[in-house]
Image (tube, rainbow, N blue to C red; front, side):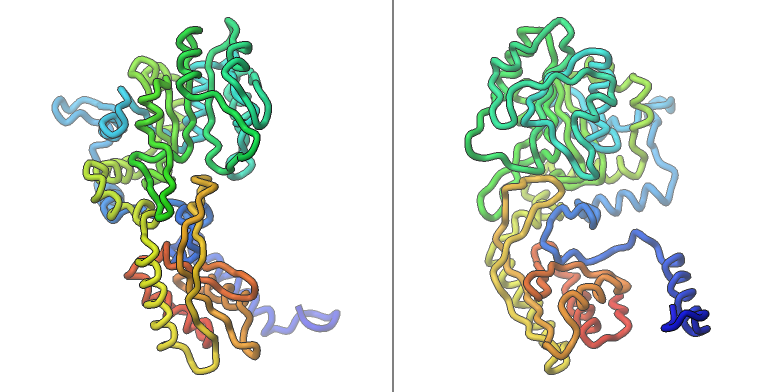
Length: 424
């Protein structure tokens, strides 16, 4: 602090102290506006919950709840039973377990079924997920011995067959949901792996990662694997996240037959990974929406954002452009619309880029820069996150709901005026 080598000025100390106190007083996790166009933005909390799910969580938080009680007998029940039944109905699985995330689901399954024995996996599926967590590390941490087969880009069913021994406890297929491999590639089909597993008495587990309950069809016609498809293929176990393409709260889903899942659920580690009442309330409400697929696509934000049409996005962008032009002072910025691409995010559909329309904000040369504007928006009471590109700030309307448009336009106008950024 200060320009010289002496003690800082009192006013500087006061400003620094006030800044620190403000940082302590303000919560770290707050609502924000996601104008990045990244549907499942990990930094911004991934899946945005449906109104029904948020309401169920709030109602459960305010009251005592029937978390672990049998309402017929009054005796203690089992948490997650209803969510499990809903998942079974939606996917065709005999039974389902819920844990706190997908990595936990994989870890628990391997711990319960393969600890001290071998797990076979293709070298091309030894993925790294967010936060530097790697599949080989999870397998070893679960107490199993990793057996790598094939090469990075080509693994045939014969590679798996040669690796099967009396020590093989599981064949693991890991869907590379956060990257895409193209070119000179080959992979054994899930059906081939299931047949090999049955011939050797070895369960086959599919870690689908970001699997969806219904076919997710973005505007460009791409599709994502469904949990029901993996179950129908004959896999003994299927694992997935609840807060990615499913569109619910953070959790991990395990699908399989009742006997195997009972064994997994009774393992001591299962209790350390169980979910709380709020997660279950949100998950049940989300899954209930899937009873009517068309209703789900409208009510669940993840599905709604993925399925927005080019015409709808163009209209929304032009609406935001007009709102901004009305609010901005003369000669502060140029505002135009342009074609762009959105991302699914969250380690889901990595090779899918969704056509969108963005609002491009170009501050005037004698004003603040685009990066300064982005910083000011992040500091707003209702923070706004966009994308920076080539000296411009891009606002992608794909992930902005209609009721957020006014708040977004007000926040940008305040940031360009250099006001207090109180967009709430």
